[in-house]
Image (cartoon, rainbow, N blue to C red; front, side, top):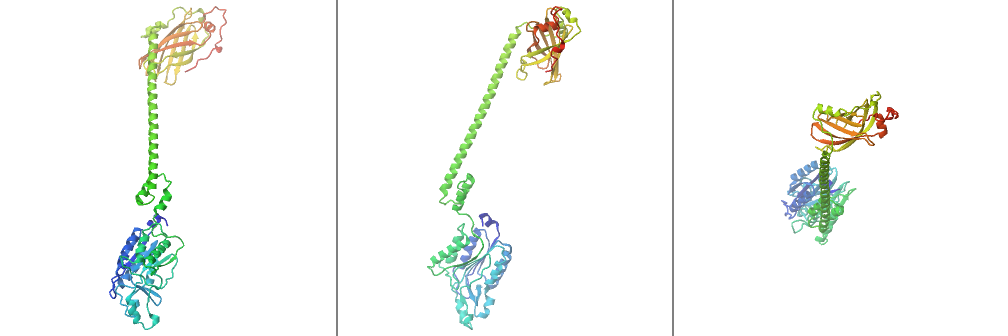
Amino acid sequence: MSASASHAEKRIALVIGNATYQNTPALSNPVNDGEDLAAALRRVGFTVVLERNLNKRGMEGAIARFARMSQDANTALFFYAGHGMQWRGINYLVPVDARMEDEFNLNFELTRLDDVLFGLERAKGVKILVLDACRNNPLLDRLNRTSSTRDLMATRGFAKIETSRGMVIAYSTQINQVAVDGTGRNSPFTQALVKEIDEPGLEIGTMFRRVAAQVNKMTEGRQLPELSVSLLGEFYLNSRETDLQTWAKIRTSSDPGQLKDFIARYPTSDLLANAQQRLDSIERAEKMRVDRERSERERVERAERNRIESDRLTREQAEREQARTNDETEGKTIPEIPSTDAQIAMLTQPAESPPAATTTQKAFYIPSQLRCTAFSANPVKRPSFETEFSFRYFNGSLTAKRIIRRRPGAEIYEGTVGQTGAIRIKSHGTYDDGRSSWVSVFSGQVGSRTVLEGRLSTTKGLKGIRICSITFKMPSSELRSVLGLLDANFPKIDKDSINKPRRE
C-alpha cells in the first residue's frame, strides 16, 4: 500500500482502555495505553474513537457503533487494554463494573470478544485486532473458588482465535499467558507498539515482530507477544516512506522542489548533506543557464542595434551621395521644367521640320530603357529604378505609355524628331491612384548610342525630382532608317522585326 493510498482510504479504529475497576484493584496503565495508541493511529490516518473505563453497557454500545462505522471501511482496528479472560474456550473482555461472583453471572457481566470480531468482519479491507489484556486478575481467583466443577474454571489469558482472510490478530502475550502491566506510563507491549507505528515504511508483520522483540527484551523473557496474520499481500499501518526510501527515488532528480521537500521532511536525516549538495549543484547549473541566456539575448540585441545603426549610416550616406549627384546634375544643360501647359507645348515642338521620310504611313516601334535616380524628397522609400518599354514612331512623332502596377498609375510620353536627329520628348503621369503627378522633359541627339537626358519633377504630392535618361535600344543604323534620317536607297526595317511595346 503506497503512502498516498494510506491517507486516501477510510481507516476506522475503536480504542478502549479499562483501568478503574470497581470490584478489584485498579490498573495503572490501560487508560494511558489507550490515549497514546489513539494518538499514534491518528498520526497515520485513522479516525479514532477513544473510550475510557467502560462498564458492560458502555462497552456493548461502543462495539455496536464500531460495527456500523466499519461497514465501508478499508481498514478497521480494535484495541483493548485492560482485564481479559477465557471461560469454557470463550474469550471475554472485562468491563469496569464486573463482579464475577460465580459462573452464572459471566454472560451478563462480561463482553464476549466474538462481538468485537463481528464488528471487525463488517470492514471490506484489512481487519486488525490488538489485545493488551490478560493482566493478572484477582476476580478470577474469586470466580474459580465458587466454581461448581473444575471444568468450569476460568483461565488467565485468551484462547486462540481462528483468523479469517484479511485478519491480523496481535496478542500482548502468548496464549494462556499473563501480560505484564508495567511500571511506567505504558505497558511494555503498548510502549513498543506506539514506537513502531511511528516508524514509517514497516510492513505490519515486520512491525509486530519488532514489537515482540522489544517486549521480550523489556520483560527479560517473561512476556512474548503472539501474532496471527492472514493477509495475501503486504500492509502498512504507517506507509510513509523513510528518508532512505525517498532518497532512492529522488537522488538523480533535477527538480529543486523535490530536494527542498526532502530537506523539510527529514531535517535530521543522515542523507541531509547529500540532498543539500544535490540542490546546490542544480541551483548553480540553473543560474549558469539563466546567465547564458541573458548573455545571448544581450548579444542578439546588440547585433540588432548595430544593424539598425549601420542601416541608418548607409541610408544617410546614400542620401548625401544622392544630394551631391543632384547638385552636380543641376549644373548640366537640361531643359527647364515647364511650369505651364504653354511652356510644355513649346518645348515639345520640333526645332526643325521632321525628315521627309516621316511622311510615310508606316509605324515603327523602338524598344527603349528608362533609368531614374532615387526621388530626392524620399530616397529610401522611392529608390532608383530602371524599366523597359517601346516608343511608337509615326510620321515624325514618338509616343509611348508606361503602366505602373506596383503603385497604380501610368505615364504618357509624346515627342518629335527633327531632320538632323534632334529629339525632344515630354511626359506626364500619375500614380497612387492620382494622389501624385509629375512631368518630365527629355532631349538628345540620334548617334552611335542614342541617350536622351531629362528630369522628372512632381506637380502634385510630395515635391522632389529624379534625374532620368531614355536609351533607345536599337542599332544606330536601324534607328536612323526608322526615323528617315538616311537617303532613300537605305533599306527600311520591317516593323515585325522590331520589339513590340512592353509594360513595366
